[in-house]
Image 1 (cartoon, rainbow, N blue to C red):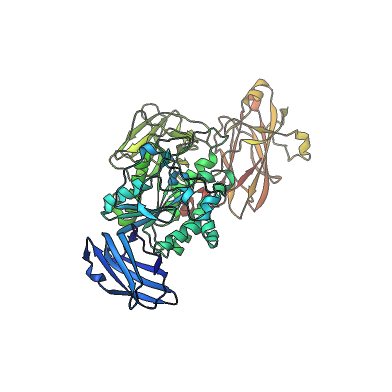
Image 2: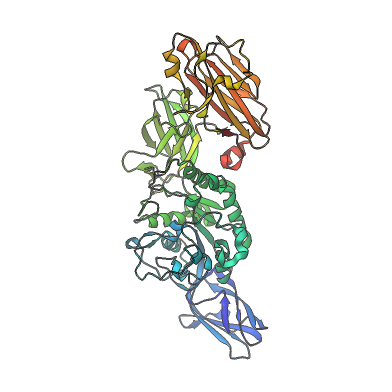
Length: 623
């Protein structure tokens, strides 16, 4: 008689109704008949298990239901087949809560071992070799992994096991110890993470590959341990921080959580994700990295029973891995969020989230104070030293903040901007790959990375057009009254130019010819991916005329400075496909400098806007 699923020495069984075990035990045998059991606790029989009939054995297999063991332990459990000599003894079994740890390296644990927390005998781990034991770092040792995927991902050759590893600390053990403190019942963790893995590699559609896929291996380990867990802790996203994968991240996360809950037969299974932190790198663009962070922040809006915890303020032990004592801080943050999903407000507060953004006029300077208000703040917002991490920008360019004041649950960003200009900007926290962010509440809980978020009402805006075709300075066309769409675009001598800021600024050229009046052209294209209502938002400081798909759409012969990003909204036929925008600007005898151009989708509901730009299609600027 041998147990293959659901009951092993040193394991933790997931508690269910009435705070008791209720799991299915399976195995192989030679005999046939009733499966009986006795459970003892410190040498005394647990009455509900004294000669209890748990199931049946036949055809070389047995199946039994192990229900009624109270949370706690450790228990010694004897199983036997009535009328035979077949017997199995399982020692040191606990009943409590069991969790899946999944994702990539920061969940696997790469922090220095000198920061490892002391193990607790009431916290157990199902290690990569399919054996239960007292949980201790490193939790994830790839050289001993049973599932082939973990060997395949490190080159296909099983490396030797390191006796005294230098690294291997993650948030898993601190998370489980904090859950033990909060619940008072034993904790078990099933280790399933693997460093460097992407959402594509975690694709649940690969579950039929069993242990040769990450999802399949996780599902196998779940089933082997009785097919019951209390929730999933997830830390992943760094490997998807590229232009292609970032666009698909939210949908892939929705599908992953849905399939976990379907396969686990737990439609409300709690799921806590960690928002990726930072990386000490200098890549050309951080847009995809910040996109993943913003999508992760918004996951609770599109996945029920899900929370995201920040990590942006935590120490690193190398260029990308959480380290120092901060893996312990992160583990406690995950536990706090998981506990909230389970018990609601009696567990405390969920992670800090943004409540609103707005503008207030500074009574002393007359300029704009950008006010970001947060929810779920314990005590008040605080920082070690000057509060930092905020940027105010248009499409990621520029910062106009000279001071940040914290008050209660609000961060007040003092700027040098008049209200009209502030209205057209976005606020961001944690911009870039390696920002310094130090704002927490009094409980030490960090603000999340967020943005860029429009200030005030949420709108569906593209970045400003900053790379497009421009003409050289051409002879004056006056106020543009008689100007038509050119019969020959080649005569405009258009060349591609990238502007440093959001304003397509040519004032150095135009001013140099003043008081002579000249004409300049701007040409850009936009792709509409699906049926929608869209418009061009135009800013200008001289006489201007606009054609969209060769049709004249706007004309202002009296245009003058200053240019504001939204001087005019121009509706156009936004059918799917590519559309051309051509703008003629008169220099107004050197007074004109240039134009602002960007697109806005206008047919979205408030709910769609709140779900974030990753949940709907937008016009795409074509260079």
